[in-house]
Length: 315
Image (tube, rainbow, N blue to C red; front, side, top):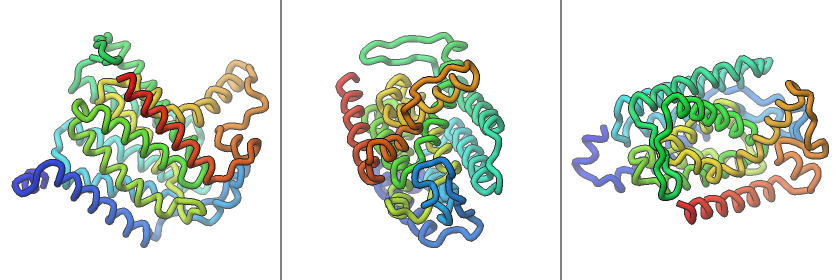
């Protein structure tokens, strides 16, 4: 389809059309949601978790499908991108099945699924790309075995910290938009079609935010947050600047990652840290600091925008 469109429009015009069409498609499908989407049961241990009870959950299924449809029509596809799309679909489906389950899946089951899909994504990347990593003006060639291990860790971490950050209306999508925009703008020359894919993903997230802004009527669930983290990890690798993820997703890493480290240390090493800090950090901000949901979102976005500017200065 892209080859037909480029006969009449240039790349920027196709991207603009793609964003508008993808946004409208997502908006309409969320405005008239699929009847099989589950309802949220509320989270017993989350701050204001009971307020989510009864809201549509798992609508990440909808916006990820819209993103994939937009990619099919408005992006020049190759085998590598198609494989990533298939793996992204698998991540979305696994998340949705968890969302739709009466009893949440065991965390070890989800961890194994994340690991398998991460390994497959990194193996795909290494089949089509070299292991050159850029840090500012320096280029490093990392041994393939080491690159493989570090990239799998990146994928697994991105999936899980993004998932953990999805606990406040509008938070995960808003901060992720800044992250994706940072990659798409700073590394557009390296990313190529993946930068265009980033803008399509931003379009579906904007449509979702119309319904997820506080007070929300629907939640992306694992179907959305896990797929979103997976996609951001793809951008990090394809940018050839994977360490920039530390800045471009710094807020998400801090918000969700500190809790993961805290749980790991306590469960497996019997080490207790940050006793007076609630995790994810957005719960601490609301419970201990008295921030409203709107304040959490706005302040997190401001901090992430500053980190993106810092990444631009260090590029």
